[in-house]
Amino acid sequence: MATEEPSKDEKGGVKFDLEKETELRFEVDSGDKVQLELLSGLAEIYGSELNRNKKYTFESGCKIAVFTWQGCSVQLTGKTEVAYVSRDTPMLLYLNTHAALEQMRQQAEKENERGPRVMVCGPMDVGKSTLCRLLLNYAVRLGRRPTLVELDVGQGNIAIPGTMGALCIERPADVEEGFSVQAPLIYHFGSTTPGTNIKLYNKITSRLAEVFNQRCDMNHKACVSGCVINTCGWVKGSGYQALVHTASAFEVDVVIVLDQERLYNELKRDLPFFVRTVLLPKSGGVVERSKDYRRESRDEKIREYFYGFRGGFFPHAFDVRFADVRIYKIGAPTIPDSCLPLGMSQEDNQLKLVPVTPGRDLVHHLLSVSTADSPDENIIETSVAGFIVVTNVDTEHQVFTVLSPAPRPLPKNILLIMDIRFMDLK
Ligand SMILES: Nc1ncnc2c1ncn2[C@@H]1O[C@H](COP(=O)(O)OP(=O)(O)OP(=O)(O)O)[C@@H](O)[C@H]1O
Image 1: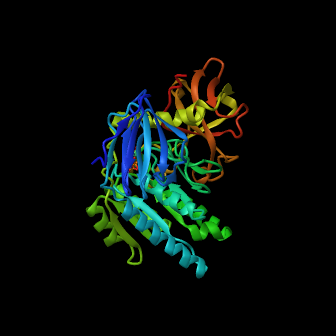
Image 2: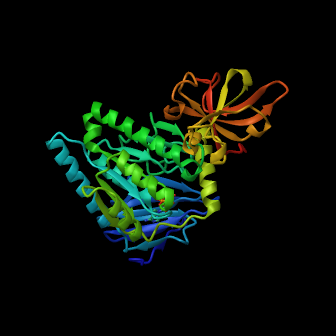
Image 3: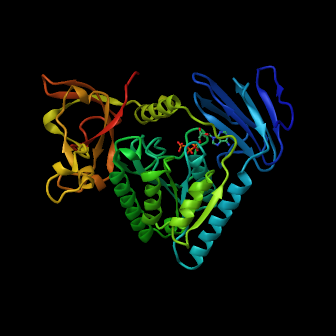
């Protein structure tokens, strides 16, 4: 618990003196703001170093841990009643994991081989995304250029929920905003749970692995730096099979299982013997998130895509004629096996491109703008250029209105519909 009682200054700021290897945890309630300032010493948030005397602002829903290896003083201003200091963190184990990965990178450099490909998995709310961020931050701080592979379709740390993608990490994550998302590679999945179309999920995973391999062939630094793969919290049945598939598609060298011994044992049993599987504890600070909270944070991610971090962007609204675009849904509804055409399996059905006729029910749906030029291309395995949301449909005039991050016209005319909806309430 607290190493020293926090002290309050006249402006309502609360000062915390943290001993080495302890962390200050706090959450920001909906509608509130908390400011953090490092007064002395060194500290970091999920592997991103804090600058001294800079005020960091955290808004609604943020769950933060300020960790110090050496000891420091920080000041919190705002609603800070729930802030507390903990000595009990798994950070030393996480640091050792990073050190082992760095050794593998050094070895890879010497022997002109590829660096470690790491898959992070575990049930929901165990800190998978946070550990990925930490490992990537530590690697990039040593001059590496690792790749983040995001397979968690529920939250979407690179683009919006309902997508899968990869991002080359060139600098540590911004303390407030996270990783800078420049030139990500994004694929359309279309829903927030892999279970809605597991065949598509696995197909895109394989595609991402293929593209990552190509990048490694061309870029030695990326190859030596390896990748960190963030996965979904669904670890049973097809979810588990998807993890095994991911491990094989990416030919992972290291699997980190957070918090669940059963999953650890299963993966140890089912993955090839040369894959190093490690079980790490979750941090006591990781907070369980309710369904509502998850829905809100998904909405927030989408809002941020269109309006920028803290409203820094101004999206465009314009009309699109039905005749100018082609909208598809990936995956036909399941029908009894006996009704399938001869020689076709249920799985083929899941990868089918089904044309969608624009109508009123399109309203609020998110659409991915495919980079493909023609439906004859392999649309499923083609990346997307961005997203739009339908705000109105006028069937009489055969147009729909969209919100788009870029002005008209749309860069391409093949659109893929998501199950996910977004209400633009601005
Ligand atoms: N040490 C910590 N102290 C306080 N909060 C933390 C700590 N580590 C992580 N968190 C917070 O806990 C929440 C859940 O963490 P995270 O998103 O990493 O979990 P996850 O396992 O990836 O979740 P999911 O179920 O979405 O896959 C995040 O809001 C994160 O900021």
